[in-house]
Image (tube, rainbow, N blue to C red; front, side):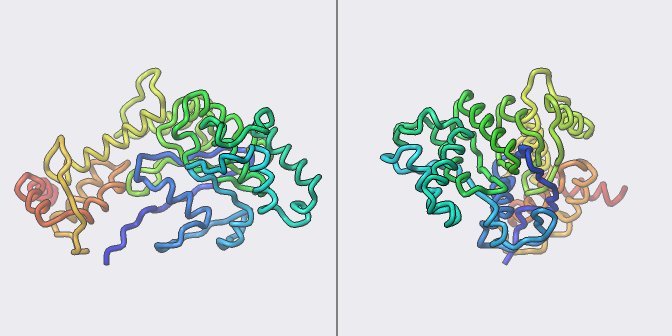
Length: 329
């Protein structure tokens, strides 16, 4: 049985009062990484160390200090915003708070003000807009009073105005001293620039960048443009769109070399043979020379996906000659 690594060599730190985003193409492992950090994964093998406040913790310890907002917003349509938050608070707060009606109500009011829901507190959840429902979802998690808040693609499905409003309330949440970590897929410039830190993943679950984004995304852009395989960002192009396009272009270049057919990707299926052929193994070394920035993100998955038909196609379409030239060199 072949075990395919989903995340490889990930490292980083998320600080209080800062917004951090996990960015990458579809299938890069953003949601998987978020689930692993939150202790929500029940399958697969996890290696490495996750620390909270400077010490290693188990899933149970992390769960007591973490709240997780799903991508979908599910609420009882007949309950008002205030009733939904109060119900969640009664279930999730400590008994000494949840049983004290006045203290619980004051805490719920504080959350509504933080998320700018106080003006619609008496509206049924079924009548809310998509952006308002998202803020209610965040509120239902915040009433548990977590130290860390995880959100899986909180701006997906929102229009530009609603997305910016969600980012504004997340900034409010971070300013309370909490740590906020989000996965983001193809963010607009307004959303992307609202974050303080970013962890960028390439296809195959490999880390490309971790660190501060900088004012107007200056830090991130400067780092990426120092890599010789990355084209310069065109003027007025969203940095997030630019880097995702670069990742996709790199993946296509590597696929073209692996398949021997430049310009289109060869169909592949998982093979039961865990040992790659010798010439295909050599091809990985060639890729390491040709694309030092992103090669590892794609080479392993391509090897695992090679079938006998693809191997024969590679042998007849020039990949073998590429390897032979490398050996002779």
